[in-house]
Image 1 (tube, one colour):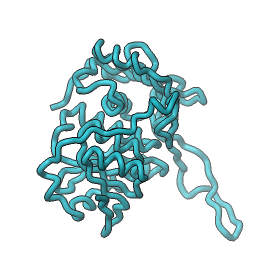
Image 2 (cartoon, rainbow, N blue to C red):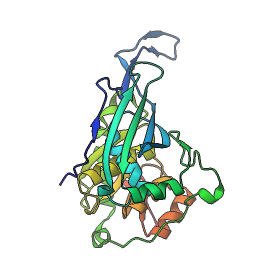
Image 3 (cartoon, one colour):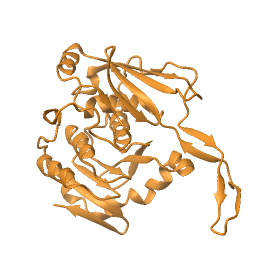
Amino acid sequence: MDINIPGAVNASRSRIEPLAAVQALRMCSDGAAEPAHREAWVASEVPVALVFNDISHAVMMATPQDLEDFALGFALSEGIIDQPGECRGIEVRHHGAGTPEAACVAEIDIAPRHFERLKQRRRTLAGRTGCGLCGVESLQALDLRAVPMPAPAWRGGLGVAEVLRPFGVLRERQRLNADAGALHAAGWATPDGQLQDVLEDVGRHNALDKLLGRLARTGRLQEPGFVVMTSRTSYELVRKCARLNIALLATVSAPTALALQLAREAGMHLWAQCRPPYALRYA
Protein backbone atom coordinates (compact mmCIF):
# COMPACT_ATOMS: atom_id res chain seq x y z
CA MET A 1 0.00 0.00 0.00
CA ASP A 2 1.29 3.44 -0.86
CA ILE A 3 2.35 5.59 2.07
CA ASN A 4 0.53 8.90 2.01
CA ILE A 5 3.07 11.67 2.65
CA PRO A 6 1.22 14.97 3.06
CA GLY A 7 2.67 17.72 0.90
CA ALA A 8 4.55 15.36 -1.40
CA VAL A 9 3.98 17.58 -4.41
CA ASN A 10 6.05 19.47 -6.92
CA ALA A 11 5.47 23.12 -6.12
CA SER A 12 6.65 24.69 -9.38
CA ARG A 13 4.80 24.93 -12.66
CA SER A 14 8.11 25.22 -14.54
CA ARG A 15 9.87 21.90 -14.11
CA ILE A 16 13.52 21.32 -14.90
CA GLU A 17 13.52 18.47 -17.40
CA PRO A 18 15.78 15.45 -16.79
CA LEU A 19 17.20 15.66 -20.33
CA ALA A 20 18.41 18.66 -22.32
CA ALA A 21 18.61 18.92 -26.11
CA VAL A 22 21.99 19.91 -27.57
CA GLN A 23 23.57 20.25 -30.98
CA ALA A 24 26.37 17.88 -31.91
CA LEU A 25 28.41 16.73 -34.89
CA ARG A 26 28.99 13.10 -35.66
CA MET A 27 32.69 12.80 -36.47
CA CYS A 28 34.34 10.12 -38.58
CA SER A 29 37.91 8.84 -38.42
CA ASP A 30 38.44 9.95 -42.03
CA GLY A 31 37.99 13.58 -40.89
CA ALA A 32 34.45 14.05 -42.17
CA ALA A 33 31.86 15.72 -39.99
CA GLU A 34 28.13 15.81 -40.44
CA PRO A 35 25.16 16.87 -38.35
CA ALA A 36 24.19 14.26 -35.80
CA HIS A 37 21.82 11.71 -37.32
CA ARG A 38 19.25 12.57 -34.63
CA GLU A 39 18.74 15.23 -32.03
CA ALA A 40 21.33 14.78 -29.32
CA TRP A 41 20.32 14.69 -25.67
CA VAL A 42 22.34 14.98 -22.49
CA ALA A 43 21.37 14.32 -18.89
CA SER A 44 20.51 17.30 -16.70
CA GLU A 45 22.61 17.69 -13.57
CA VAL A 46 21.49 20.36 -11.12
CA PRO A 47 21.96 21.20 -7.43
CA VAL A 48 19.25 19.68 -5.26
CA ALA A 49 19.07 21.16 -1.76
CA LEU A 50 17.68 18.85 0.92
CA VAL A 51 16.11 20.98 3.63
CA PHE A 52 14.86 19.35 6.83
CA ASN A 53 12.42 21.38 8.94
CA ASP A 54 13.66 24.61 7.32
CA ILE A 55 17.36 23.76 7.94
CA SER A 56 19.50 23.04 4.88
CA HIS A 57 21.38 19.79 5.40
CA ALA A 58 22.83 18.75 2.03
CA VAL A 59 23.19 19.89 -1.56
CA MET A 60 23.54 17.04 -4.03
CA MET A 61 24.15 17.20 -7.77
CA ALA A 62 21.39 15.08 -9.26
CA THR A 63 19.04 14.50 -12.17
CA PRO A 64 15.82 16.47 -11.46
CA GLN A 65 13.36 13.58 -11.63
CA ASP A 66 11.71 11.44 -8.92
CA LEU A 67 12.93 13.92 -6.31
CA GLU A 68 10.23 13.07 -3.78
CA ASP A 69 11.51 9.48 -3.83
CA PHE A 70 15.07 10.79 -3.63
CA ALA A 71 14.38 12.93 -0.57
CA LEU A 72 12.64 10.12 1.31
CA GLY A 73 15.29 7.57 0.35
CA PHE A 74 18.10 9.91 1.41
CA ALA A 75 16.45 10.56 4.78
CA LEU A 76 16.17 6.81 5.41
CA SER A 77 19.50 5.63 4.01
CA GLU A 78 21.45 8.35 5.82
CA GLY A 79 19.78 7.51 9.14
CA ILE A 80 18.01 10.85 9.50
CA ILE A 81 14.73 9.01 10.08
CA ASP A 82 14.17 5.34 10.90
CA GLN A 83 10.74 4.71 9.36
CA PRO A 84 8.94 6.21 6.33
CA GLY A 85 6.10 7.39 8.55
CA GLU A 86 8.49 9.71 10.38
CA CYS A 87 8.55 11.85 7.24
CA ARG A 88 5.47 14.05 7.56
CA GLY A 89 5.68 15.86 4.24
CA ILE A 90 7.86 16.53 1.18
CA GLU A 91 7.59 19.53 -1.12
CA VAL A 92 9.84 19.90 -4.15
CA ARG A 93 10.39 23.25 -5.86
CA HIS A 94 12.10 23.81 -9.22
CA HIS A 95 13.84 27.14 -9.81
CA GLY A 96 15.35 28.69 -12.93
CA ALA A 97 14.29 26.07 -15.46
CA GLY A 98 16.15 26.61 -18.72
CA THR A 99 18.83 28.84 -17.17
CA PRO A 100 22.37 28.20 -15.87
CA GLU A 101 21.01 28.87 -12.37
CA ALA A 102 18.59 25.93 -12.47
CA ALA A 103 18.24 24.23 -9.10
CA CYS A 104 15.76 22.29 -7.00
CA VAL A 105 14.84 22.41 -3.33
CA ALA A 106 13.27 19.48 -1.49
CA GLU A 107 11.71 20.57 1.79
CA ILE A 108 11.24 17.60 4.12
CA ASP A 109 9.18 17.78 7.30
CA ILE A 110 10.34 15.19 9.86
CA ALA A 111 9.27 14.34 13.39
CA PRO A 112 10.75 16.66 16.08
CA ARG A 113 12.78 13.95 17.84
CA HIS A 114 14.56 13.08 14.61
CA PHE A 115 15.17 16.72 13.84
CA GLU A 116 16.87 17.11 17.22
CA ARG A 117 19.05 14.11 16.43
CA LEU A 118 19.88 15.60 13.05
CA LYS A 119 20.89 18.92 14.58
CA GLN A 120 23.25 17.16 16.99
CA ARG A 121 25.22 15.54 14.20
CA ARG A 122 24.49 18.05 11.45
CA ARG A 123 27.13 18.65 8.87
CA THR A 124 27.29 20.78 5.76
CA LEU A 125 27.50 18.36 2.85
CA ALA A 126 28.11 19.55 -0.72
CA GLY A 127 27.63 16.37 -2.73
CA ARG A 128 29.03 15.53 -6.15
CA THR A 129 27.87 12.77 -8.44
CA GLY A 130 30.83 10.46 -7.84
CA CYS A 131 31.54 11.23 -4.22
CA GLY A 132 30.41 9.69 -0.97
CA LEU A 133 32.42 11.75 1.51
CA CYS A 134 32.00 15.33 0.35
CA GLY A 135 31.50 17.73 3.23
CA VAL A 136 32.56 15.41 6.05
CA GLU A 137 34.48 17.66 8.39
CA SER A 138 36.69 15.11 10.17
CA LEU A 139 37.73 11.46 10.08
CA GLN A 140 35.69 10.95 13.25
CA ALA A 141 32.56 11.91 11.30
CA LEU A 142 32.93 9.00 8.89
CA ASP A 143 30.34 6.25 9.20
CA LEU A 144 32.23 3.15 8.10
CA ARG A 145 30.60 0.48 10.26
CA ALA A 146 27.59 -1.72 9.61
CA VAL A 147 25.15 -3.41 11.98
CA PRO A 148 24.54 -7.13 11.28
CA MET A 149 21.16 -7.80 9.67
CA PRO A 150 18.98 -10.93 9.84
CA ALA A 151 19.61 -13.50 7.11
CA PRO A 152 16.35 -13.89 5.13
CA ALA A 153 15.24 -17.43 4.32
CA TRP A 154 14.59 -16.63 0.64
CA ARG A 155 18.23 -15.72 0.01
CA GLY A 156 19.48 -19.27 0.56
CA GLY A 157 17.77 -20.55 -2.57
CA LEU A 158 18.89 -17.72 -4.83
CA GLY A 159 21.47 -18.65 -7.47
CA VAL A 160 23.31 -17.06 -10.36
CA ALA A 161 20.36 -17.46 -12.76
CA GLU A 162 18.09 -15.39 -10.52
CA VAL A 163 20.76 -12.75 -9.89
CA LEU A 164 21.53 -12.34 -13.60
CA ARG A 165 17.93 -12.36 -14.83
CA PRO A 166 17.18 -8.66 -14.09
CA PHE A 167 20.40 -7.58 -15.80
CA GLY A 168 19.08 -9.08 -19.03
CA VAL A 169 16.36 -6.40 -19.18
CA LEU A 170 17.83 -3.61 -17.06
CA ARG A 171 19.34 -1.68 -19.96
CA GLU A 172 16.10 -1.60 -21.96
CA ARG A 173 14.28 -0.28 -18.89
CA GLN A 174 16.64 2.72 -18.66
CA ARG A 175 14.44 5.18 -20.53
CA LEU A 176 16.58 8.27 -19.89
CA ASN A 177 19.89 6.54 -20.47
CA ALA A 178 18.67 5.22 -23.82
CA ASP A 179 18.45 8.80 -25.07
CA ALA A 180 21.34 10.47 -23.27
CA GLY A 181 23.73 7.91 -21.78
CA ALA A 182 25.65 8.82 -18.61
CA LEU A 183 22.88 7.79 -16.20
CA HIS A 184 23.13 5.04 -13.62
CA ALA A 185 20.17 2.85 -12.75
CA ALA A 186 19.09 1.17 -9.54
CA GLY A 187 16.51 -1.59 -9.87
CA TRP A 188 14.48 -3.77 -7.52
CA ALA A 189 14.16 -7.48 -8.30
CA THR A 190 12.06 -10.19 -6.70
CA PRO A 191 13.79 -13.37 -5.44
CA ASP A 192 12.99 -15.12 -8.73
CA GLY A 193 14.85 -12.38 -10.61
CA GLN A 194 11.89 -10.42 -11.98
CA LEU A 195 12.84 -6.77 -12.39
CA GLN A 196 10.32 -4.36 -10.88
CA ASP A 197 11.14 -0.66 -10.38
CA VAL A 198 14.02 1.11 -12.19
CA LEU A 199 15.17 4.59 -11.09
CA GLU A 200 17.84 6.64 -12.88
CA ASP A 201 20.26 9.42 -11.97
CA VAL A 202 23.67 10.74 -12.98
CA GLY A 203 24.87 9.74 -9.50
CA ARG A 204 24.85 6.07 -8.54
CA HIS A 205 24.05 6.76 -4.88
CA ASN A 206 21.31 9.18 -5.96
CA ALA A 207 19.75 6.46 -8.12
CA LEU A 208 19.83 4.11 -5.14
CA ASP A 209 18.22 6.67 -2.85
CA LYS A 210 15.46 7.19 -5.41
CA LEU A 211 14.84 3.45 -5.52
CA LEU A 212 14.84 3.11 -1.72
CA GLY A 213 12.47 6.05 -1.44
CA ARG A 214 10.13 4.51 -4.02
CA LEU A 215 10.10 1.22 -2.10
CA ALA A 216 9.47 3.03 1.18
CA ARG A 217 6.70 5.18 -0.27
CA THR A 218 4.91 2.14 -1.68
CA GLY A 219 5.35 0.05 1.48
CA ARG A 220 7.68 -2.59 -0.04
CA LEU A 221 10.92 -2.14 1.90
CA GLN A 222 10.24 -5.25 3.98
CA GLU A 223 9.30 -7.46 1.04
CA PRO A 224 11.74 -10.13 -0.23
CA GLY A 225 13.95 -8.85 -3.02
CA PHE A 226 17.33 -7.41 -3.93
CA VAL A 227 18.92 -4.34 -5.51
CA VAL A 228 20.64 -4.36 -8.91
CA MET A 229 22.77 -1.48 -10.15
CA THR A 230 24.66 -0.43 -13.26
CA SER A 231 27.65 0.86 -11.30
CA ARG A 232 30.58 -0.44 -9.31
CA THR A 233 29.92 -1.63 -5.76
CA SER A 234 31.07 1.38 -3.78
CA TYR A 235 31.09 1.53 0.00
CA GLU A 236 28.24 4.05 0.22
CA LEU A 237 25.91 1.79 -1.76
CA VAL A 238 26.55 -1.03 0.71
CA ARG A 239 26.11 1.29 3.68
CA LYS A 240 22.80 2.64 2.41
CA CYS A 241 21.45 -0.86 1.67
CA ALA A 242 22.63 -2.19 5.01
CA ARG A 243 20.81 0.56 6.88
CA LEU A 244 17.54 -0.60 5.34
CA ASN A 245 18.24 -4.35 5.70
CA ILE A 246 18.65 -4.99 1.97
CA ALA A 247 20.14 -8.48 2.12
CA LEU A 248 21.66 -8.67 -1.37
CA LEU A 249 23.23 -6.15 -3.74
CA ALA A 250 24.26 -7.03 -7.30
CA THR A 251 26.17 -4.68 -9.60
CA VAL A 252 27.63 -4.58 -13.11
CA SER A 253 31.14 -3.65 -12.00
CA ALA A 254 33.50 -4.63 -9.20
CA PRO A 255 33.47 -3.76 -5.48
CA THR A 256 36.08 -1.95 -3.46
CA ALA A 257 37.78 -3.54 -0.46
CA LEU A 258 35.88 -1.21 1.86
CA ALA A 259 32.57 -2.23 0.29
CA LEU A 260 33.42 -5.88 0.93
CA GLN A 261 34.37 -5.13 4.52
CA LEU A 262 31.07 -3.39 5.21
CA ALA A 263 29.11 -6.16 3.49
CA ARG A 264 30.79 -8.79 5.67
CA GLU A 265 29.96 -6.81 8.81
CA ALA A 266 26.34 -6.42 7.73
CA GLY A 267 25.90 -10.02 6.58
CA MET A 268 24.99 -8.80 3.10
CA HIS A 269 25.59 -10.93 0.00
CA LEU A 270 27.46 -9.10 -2.76
CA TRP A 271 27.40 -10.11 -6.41
CA ALA A 272 29.43 -8.09 -8.91
CA GLN A 273 30.55 -8.04 -12.53
CA CYS A 274 27.06 -9.30 -13.35
CA ARG A 275 27.33 -9.67 -17.11
CA PRO A 276 25.38 -12.66 -18.38
CA PRO A 277 26.24 -15.49 -18.43
CA TYR A 278 28.71 -14.80 -15.60
CA ALA A 279 28.74 -13.13 -12.21
CA LEU A 280 31.07 -13.09 -9.23
CA ARG A 281 29.76 -13.82 -5.75
CA TYR A 282 31.98 -12.55 -2.95
CA ALA A 283 32.25 -14.46 0.31
